[in-house]
Image (cartoon, rainbow, N blue to C red):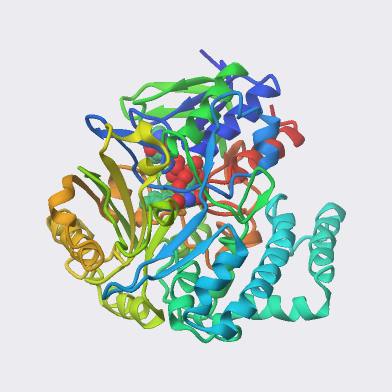
Length: 530
Ligand SMILES: Cc1cc2nc3c(=O)[nH]c(=O)nc-3n(C[C@H](O)[C@H](O)[C@H](O)COP(=O)(O)OP(=O)(O)OC[C@H]3O[C@@H](n4cnc5c(N)ncnc54)[C@H](O)[C@@H]3O)c2cc1C
């Protein structure tokens, strides 16, 4: 049936679903096609073992844009976030560790155990970062301006961005330049002296990149992790009830309520292109479905090289897209446990464990973890970011039992034996993670009922993230704003007419934000292409 649909969205990740919801809300006839049996992409909940539901990939939420929640009425459709109040860093040898709390005075007291000076500076640092992040949000809530264009609309959008920086004032503007150019470790050195404090702060800068905390440019990503907000509370993180798939399902429910059709278990082979124009999709089983436009929620590599194909691209564009850096560096190990893994028996109660737990005792620890990755090995002592969400959301595990999610860096996609070798290494990698945790939770082995190891190879093969990059492409400065994914095509368009993009590989990048889906849908509607 010709042009049955106004838009086909390839991929039911949360951005694809947000995109579908906005287009359907505007009265368009929309179809979402998802390859897996379950929606959500990297924001997915799955009952991997009976009774135990994992946030299989992403595990905490805060970047999701509040105006999208309002405009799509997501709360009504099941969007429900449980805020986290603590961020704990255990230390070896039975030390009390360092816990940062929602209560600033408690946090100051904890930091003072390691450095009185740092405890005094910490508040000011947080204020500066929060202020810069607030302004950065002005940038992420709009399509990136095209710096090469003299079109008045582009110039005014560039001007708006310039004003954002001007409004910082001279002191913060200089700080911002440092943030854009320095390494996260160097940037933190400007403020703090305690290695214990700096360790978990610095790692925010390297999440999802193949860089170390001492690599220049990583300080910016630190800011990215200060951009969160929940219910108006700035910089807070939380758990989606029922796992991060809850966010995706809320987006899917909203899309359906506006009339969008969603199909799972549908593998799209490529976009149907006639005379340089997208006219629908061709499925892996050979079926064709026509539409006026197609929106790809896949990463730039897949969109350009598989959905479009090199035959339909100029060699310059093919070269540029092949240079877009993916090089995944992270993995995930999800545990089903028979009881609570106590990371610090010296602390009273379990409140300190109800947020995230970072295994990164100091800066050197994580830099050494990177050293191994640089030469094609996973880190034997990795940085691990742990959450035990069943402590706050009992729906995730049977009574008395728990799920523990461990985000790991570094697990380089390009392992020295070659990426296809990852399946053979998976359990060894899982052992390294479990053994590292054992240094803090000596009885961990006896608590483990099940262990799910997700390598960068799995992220590629199962979740469709090329080279296992968790953000559909590194969040490094040269791949942001008007250069994401490539210069000239940073506004959700592609070289193929009527083929648009909406995923994390577009501006403003990765994380459960919904922005790629939203900004792409609004651009499509603004251009009245359907
Ligand atoms: C291990 C991990 C941990 C993370 N942790 C966090 C976190 O805690 N907090 C946070 O904010 N962010 C986190 N992220 C990042 C965040 O989850 C992603 O940036 C975001 O979910 C990406 O959403 P998306 O819709 O842009 O793309 P995706 O989720 O990548 O969606 C793409 C969809 O397309 C589908 N697809 C692929 N090929 C085809 C095809 N041929 N036909 C049809 N469908 C296809 C895929 O199955 C997938 O559903 C994490 C990511 C990973 C992988």
